[in-house]
Image (cartoon, rainbow, N blue to C red; front, top):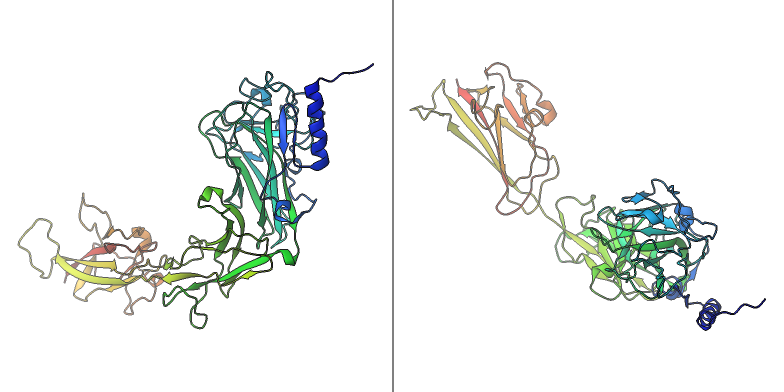
Length: 509
């Protein structure tokens, strides 16, 4: 028996054959498959290793079926590996849901590929054909996010992260898929355009450097949320070494330091360096749009303040950035030099002296003590024995930096002619029920009377708050000689000068 294939099918089959012979972009009647991408390992002149470091989701393939049409599992094959969204069978998913599907010959609704009128056929795995499953997402307010944990990564080696993605709709607002490496948006697909022509599978790939890491967390999700028409497919996520030789690579290095003379230049003889401060490397791709930046690597400075990115592929668009929010930076340190440096790199080059200097700001605290007569009823009272007086200690920060956290400790010595009032400072209905009134303007401190106020009866001034461990007794206690204050937090700086005050009462003996 002889079979006759229509002419358009013969043409399509010829395109497939040529594509498999010569690589690059190849086409089916219902979908096109493009493997070329400018930031892939091979596009940058290196060699891609065959070993895939990804193990989650069946090594990033999302599993297989037997090749029959429209196969989608009813039970989630990867429980707890996707956050957000609800799992369902592909043909039952709604906004915010996700599924896995293989060999689609029937669209799940009239908005989806395959277009049974203009490009009938099947939507299949771009690498494994009809048997391969792929991830389908209908993102909304509850956006499904894929999560990968990758181990045994080799420090300072280059890796290519690659995946396939495509808009699954015939006509819709474009979506974008982000790859987030260790909490940093590292790569964006750009807009995934919906088309009525053949569904255009695209393999996306970018190269990053492991830096000082041996483990990596990866998450992938849509950026467009909150409404329908954002559906996409994603498939075959791989992480493979991008093999280079020393002649192909270069390095970028510098120092993180305290710029004591604030001249924006590292003076190695007399300027202190900063340890364990994170530095990040990006590929800006030659434009000023941060959404197009590709995260390449991150390292932390050594005790000498030095950092280095090694084994880097040449790139004219590298940019080094220091993390000014690093928790190891003291509160008094603010960046003085530019926060980022353009560092174009050619093969074999060491791009040095990419230094980041921090200016040391300083808290300057001043304290004033004042005394006034306690006279709530505006009587004709004087500062004579038997009457109460109020002592107020006011502290302001006139410097350009905050204090260290929990660094404030004040001790006031009571005159021998007064006795401490151990009752409600301002009486019933006042602003406090304690014997001490705390007030602040812009100081950003936390105050708790039981925690932050102490007393001492001894004759030696307490050296620390722990020594202020006596408890006043009675309404007036003449044995209290010292009152201690240690408000919680770091006192802020700013304009006008932040301030706080403590007030307490004593009776003149």
